[in-house]
Image (cartoon, rainbow, N blue to C red; front, top):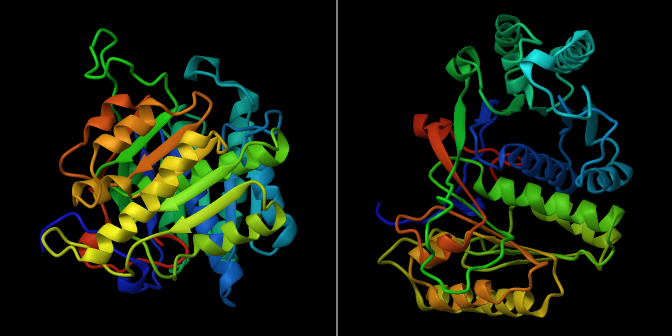
Length: 380
């Protein structure tokens, strides 16, 4: 096969075996990707009558500090209390290895004790261990004990581990390892554009897993911000090349829309099939343009504070949309509007130069490469 086409829900075969995921690296998107999986898992529990439950266990993120996504997660907990549990451990502030103390070690051990109990119980279909990697790197937990526990996880349990500096022992047993690599422009680099955007454009690309889930996590954070802080913080989620149904995040987004209809809008476009280069059909161009016209108007209007453009990059790479109108729209966007763009591409378009954040998901391991199927509520 040639081209840049993406796997759709209609083309996916679901697996039953759980996998161990690791997201690390210096780039942005690690915890966001975990939140995206949380959103999908909750959506699966809402839309299908099957046993599914997620534990979001967050290290180094103590309860003394609030996070944007909290309000959205609490809203989903209120509506579906049987689907998600959240626990925070640690201090609310950041610290180095030299600053780690008995309290930090005690909090890390408390969190790990909860994690061990959750894994042993087999109650959860997905366990997210957010920022576990730096906890181990700080010497607050024994890496051998962590590896031993994870190796004994129930066969159907999915475990997501995030944070910088994943220890080699965890990487060795992981089924998926996606490194978020930061692309930083030199401070003296001159841009091709005379009026460069003042910021607020984030791009998630690369061959590794975590691009769309990072965008979904970002959407969850933005919706939470709208619920708890700014009722005018409206969110638009636009997705290309993902027509049809079968995407589990839809149910969770719909539930949030029902509770807060003024805060979030969601639209899919495209056929419910993979689009390969050289095999584009007329409807592919029509669908791509339809979604772009909505995106362009939404960005220009200033009505939305966060706009997610999921899989825009491969849409452009497949030449379903021209680059220049996208560049001009981003150059003229309101300064308070944040735009998140995702998807792999072989030829980075010129609007990459406008990004204030560019995180490349580098694939070191992926279970799909071993012929293992994707899973509803995790991969789509």
